[in-house]
Length: 389
Ligand SMILES: *Cc1c(COP(=O)(O)O)cnc(C)c1O
Image 1: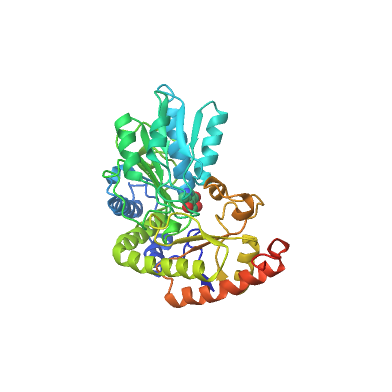
Image 2: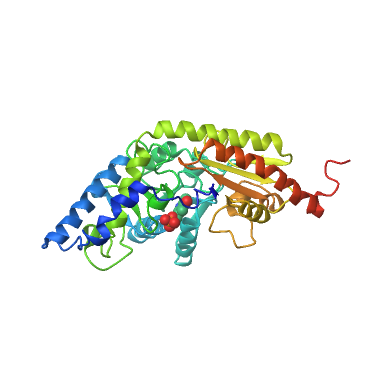
């Protein structure tokens, strides 16, 4: 199997599995039972992991709260800020191409009486900071803009958006689930107030993530119960998960520049080869301002779903877009959001690499995809006569 769907999830590193192992069977104490030595050992691992993860984004450990993943972090940031700051205003600004963990949370809040503005993006999926600025009113309590898009890889001008939110006194949340561990992030330099991340996107375990909450940000709790996470998120700490997350993020941030260089080389080779060899094909997302591991294409006259099934049968795992919309017949809201018509959006393929991806795998994939696209087109009534006039 050649796995090229790393935007959906990644393989855990052996070193991460090894780091986690003792916390299932030996150091399994309850990290909040600090009156026992078993609990203390677990607590120590929790404290160290929090320091490690915080350091990777330039935060203080006391500003980092572990969650069950990226979706919970997004839900917490948006619902938490909205509920807690109702007295100031009821307006939230986000974009049309966010992950569903953000979009569906905002839609839920709209049903509760909040007002949400969905700012459109340009043809590359990038939001213009001026468009955000224009929408900010006295009532605005939160701006939520994703760091990098999970389908098309475009990286947003986060520093500019952070700066303008700070100037206007509005909280700035970013869903950095795709960006964490992939690009350098410093929450202070970028003026980020809240940031979501998820371990399984950077070779850590599934079911664990974190929300960075800048000191002083007013936010309601989402999970009520015990006093874990400084009284801000109940449930017995997932110590093994958190240890795995810290190990994975530390390794992702070590030698990031070197790994990025290799990824960008492979990414660009893939993009150039596909665009050159397969006609009626477009690249989705920004050419330069994009995640080092992301490629996304639309092939005219075919269905992305049939393409990915054919590729899967040959051992290549890619996706037609986001794991969250696959299975539904609607084209991706991201591809529609960048202005593609339905018929083109349907022919999408996302190929996302990881540091484990080799040049041989990319070469082999490039060789395989052209003939499959041609075969599918030859079967398509839409393609009949195209290019033959
Ligand atoms: C994967 C992803 C999420 C959801 O993270 P989970 O940990 O799977 O809940 C949210 N936002 C983006 C951009 C993602 O890529």
